Amino acid sequence: MTTSSAATGTLITVAPTGAEHAKADLPQLPTTLEELVDTARRCEAAGASLIHLHIRDGEHAPTLDAGYLRAAVEAVRETGDLVVQLSTGGSVHDPLEQRLTVLDAEPDSCSLTCGTTNFGDDVFLNPWPFMSELYVQAQDREIVPEFELFDLGHVHALARLLDTHGLPFGGRVHVDFVTGVPGGMPATTAALMAGVAMLPPAVTSWSATGIGRGHLPIMAAALSAGGHLRVGMEDNVVFRRGQVVEHNDELVARAAELAALLQRPAMSTEDARALLGVKDRRG
Image (cartoon, rainbow, N blue to C red; front, side, top):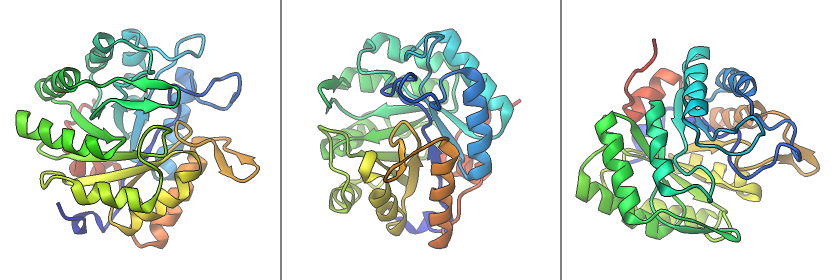
């Protein structure tokens, strides 16, 4: 894999909600359909080209309900041109069988975590048979996976998936390093670069996420090494010391500003679609 092909632009993913934060603690967290649509619109304007969605129900609790998922995909798709990616992780408490049903909502992309990891006091379960089944179903449904890597062992599992099942739909292989989760790889430049060095040749692009305090260091490291970025309130709710994030577009705008300073400006949604090889489901 080379990073030079990514040097002309930066794919900025926004992960606006997640499954961990409570609406009661963060009223500005976008959990309703109306809030997600507004977030998508504002973040696209700020420089995002992909949105990674976790869905909440009427009580603001994480849900994998088919109706909520499909409504969110359709509403966000109608409001702009962002690549719509659904999380297949759900929350750490969701059963594996239900997590597979996320693909029924027909997103452009889905997350595919390449291994089980400790997640704070919990365990984020991703055994090989589940990973394999999710990957094959995504291929069959022409949905592009984003391979999420929480640890270096996950890079090896990614290579095993590709060796076993071939390339994803569209022929591109995009991965995201999720760093700083208690139990996963640390949010350090050294850890990130170790993961990048291990990536199999089939990988065509990579991005990185820094949880909490790792947000800015990982952003800088990824940009300097030719990678792309994921930001959002799923991963970080503090803009700077003493200042809580009020809207996801603040994080997107800062990422776009840094990318522009490094002469790798935020990528358009059309360039992002080409980079990822997604199927055009608009209209």
